Length: 389
Image (cartoon, rainbow, N blue to C red; front, side, top):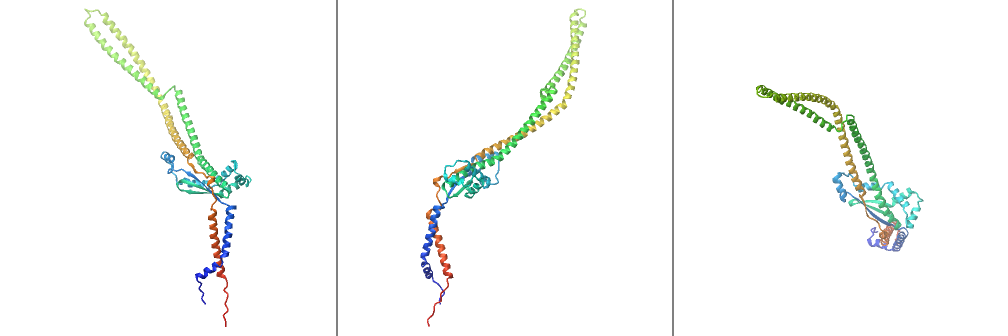
């Protein structure tokens, strides 16, 4: 008895069952047609671009000014934010608040009876995100209606742009409000210091500390110069008086003494006036010098106020610089996200196509048929043949 089975015998077994294979193929083809007509799948796709320094001139320019560094890909961070329940709730609210022209979309929305969370969960099952090269995010949607797939893809792109922009602007708005409050506080400190310095100078009848110091020095120098000039003039007059007296003694017999004596008396009176002026100027000099010494503690106090003012002003300049950088970042964020491509209704087609779906059905039916026939023949009991005597 030969237990080996040839390929010809195997082929004969399968060919003998061709009717079953044909019926199975027709049955699966019918299922494929019904599925295509009654349960279609319409995939739609949209593209969102998250700009970085590699694909945005504005981002590259701001990096040179602000010097910011990104430790995570902005597109990956955006997908993390879009996969949250808050985003799908906003998408559901946009469907509920926006007037829909298509009755198919209205029927889809009305089936949830205004329940935002149920609608958000349904949209979450239909909308998927995929990261693509160059900072692109692909929005892949698949529903059983062409209009619904297009609407979910396009609304998803629009809501995502606003959601991501507002999410990042919220952080910068909080930082901007903090720096603005610090700037206002610093300005109040500067104004207080300014008012304090003005009040202290008014108490001492000083218009300007530097001006007071300059005018006082000039006045003291003028008094010293007047005293010095008066002393020089007295010396000159004394020398002139000696000469006149010597001349008066030598010419006492031949000349009149009236002219010389009058000149000598005049010079002596002038010296007396100059000595009185010197005494007065010395008294003024001593008094004003004592007043200037009293101004020293006041000057130290004013210098302290001035140092505090410069310190607060440096803080003010630093805060304004940071606030300007935040303004640049907000400008970039408002232009950071672009919608590269919206989905158009005429481009949405049912996939897979009817021909491809029939071919897949035939292949699956034949694979199942051959497997079942093989298993039946494998476990089929062998009939014993009776041998003749």
